[in-house]
Image (cartoon, rainbow, N blue to C red; front, top):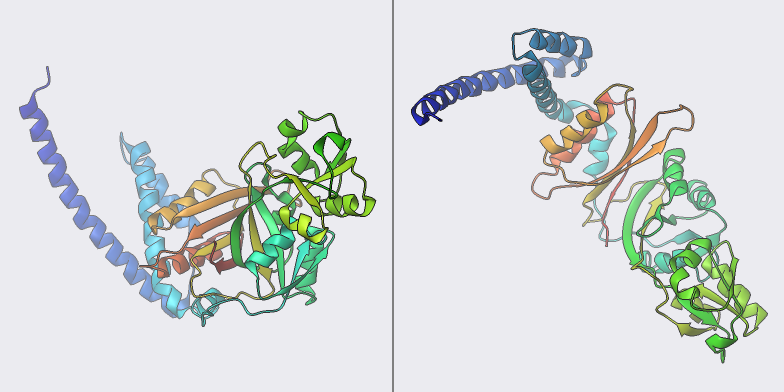
Length: 379
């Protein structure tokens, strides 16, 4: 039977021990701050792996509870580094993001021209019209060519799909974010509503062939299975709509948007043919970072040292600084088998935006690769 008197006595001892720990930790963090003040003079590295490894080894060998003490010491040292980076940050002129993120904010993106992937009537053009209403837009034939147009100065902005609720991530776009030195300046999640389109006067019973992008055909497969039709694949939904318009044959229909129906003068035969709610997240890319007044999301891409627990260590930094992670996505490093890049979105707290800078500063200093992709708002 549990003796509450003995249990209360033990708890009193724990409370007294905790008070000692609080005092010792306060002293330790004060010393860490003193170390930072010395490092400001020389800008010597905050993270010294060999010293931390030595301390962790001592913790492991410290007694019967070494296996429990070591991870606590690892967390204490991580918090100490965060404190030191916060002290050094205002003095490090080589950390250009400090200047970038504190630069003048603009109320909205400047007008210009925007490139999207696809032809007239594509969902990406619709997204470009929504995201950049003051810009002229034009299409190209691949995600990479959208990035090239922006990088080469032939477009002010590029509009690309990056995630879809039914098809998942658009891997090629993530690869382009690694390859090209471009910045996300805006994002939006837009409903994708597939419609069955035909030339005017068509009845559904007349249709023998339905054309569209493979994903659109799959997303509408339940509806299409109720029809006696053949499926024909096209590079995108807009190409399919254009083909049906030019063919002018009631036996051929397309799956595309209401936007495409207007452009190619087609009739909407059915506007409820998707089997699931379908939304796509689009991003706007620019050659230089542009920070709008309501920007509150930061995106980065980074790689990790090939060590156990390295991802967990990075994520704990965001937790320690009170930064909310919105998304993390991995992509294989094509030049290093079994190694990965990580794409990460996090929100910037209104009450403490400096913590976002501290996190970026730490990652830039400690990771083998860390690329800032932009700070932006998302609708």
